[in-house]
Image 1: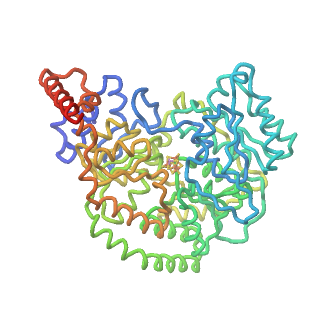
Image 2 (image 1 turned 30 degrees about the horizontal axis):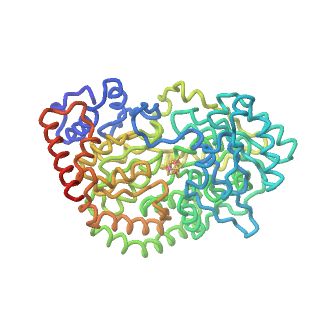
Image 3 (image 1 turned 90 degrees about the vertical axis):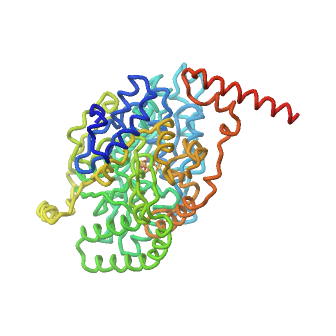
Length: 572
Ligand code: CFM
């Protein structure tokens, strides 16, 4: 794309390419070469190769987090009845403490919930110099003495990797000494290019040390795990409730509002459905290989997504009563939702949205916006991989780079005693011949319009350009750029923590989200915002990037400063 002269492009591609040019022109050559692989004009028919899961260039303001955040914060953090000990300085622990809205509602009043606690070895200079293993062992003993948890998980932070503390041997010793499951995760923040590496490390550890420890069989034939659903703002509860109404039993949600026993028992389910492909596809594959549980991708965000997902689960089990019940539930839910959707659509139809979130929501929420007639003009993930953009078909062509090689690729085999294929190979083949797809994810690009802009790991500069040129009616993003966006007069809906709202999943959540977006895009308040640097020109002069002002610009700035000074003196 970048080599094609602009004038030879078809007209509908021109604008996307021109916007891309505008974004890139400020960058030095090396930065530009890298960023141009990460910004593409979309072609849904044949998605181009995108430069994803590569290192962010230092100096560019990114929204990404670290490997420790992906492991401790995202995948393991929500397991509420195990003790999570961060081995490292207190800051790493503090900033992973209750900062993500993975809500928890213990099953019974006596059920333990340690999520309110923040536990760390609080490493000091002494441990950095002489090693911190003793202090870590002591922290495990102390935590056990106070809480008697079912399990302890230990997380290594950057300094632990640098000084070489062996967290795994401490975990083994502590397991023997305390008689509980103590497992360690080498998820040092620097281990990968983003939190995505932490997801993989967490999947490996949860699979090796937890899944399969409790063989209690399921009584419901329609028992499933919901993988990659973290109960942000109560989403998992909304999905659970919907599935329960249909007669589907959720064994384990990995890992939204889940306890240790449920995780250990997850391998007894008959199906894995995957919400967030990025953070948990490894687990789905490993469980299939070891236990014979098939998986497919679902999306419970938005009415269309939830309907399709429910029907697919019904089709998988192939039970007439279940399928009928699912249709009844869809009809009931839609009877309530349809008028709200139509009302909101009458005001939102044709409005434009851009989404830059994590590794799955920037795609999931496009379905929901489509429900109310809103068009996604641009989207991108922070840290997803090529398969999340281009579809899983490209998996064999993704080259393992040095950063990915850092992460253990565990070899999984069928469990000699417990491998139990939920469908025979013949049944699977027959279903696939009928158009049913397993292990499927087509990625974001195939669903997006031709020549919409795909931007991986967007920077603040690119976001500003996008706003100036495309003027979206709302942008979905996170706290790291919310206020940059809003100061430019565009409402920003946070799709990580939901701005303290939610749930947005399932039909009940869709109604919440439609109404919230309606309020945001149809209020006039944003048109009246004047950022401070427009009122105080001296601020503009200091903040606008300008390598060398032209003589005219310098004269204007001098004049503005003089005027501001005079106004200030007058005020005194
Ligand atoms: Fe998956 Fe997530 Fe996401 Fe994610 Fe996340 Fe999150 Fe997210 Mo924030 S697991 S990839 S690492 S859906 S915390 S619940 S909102 S970036 S899009």
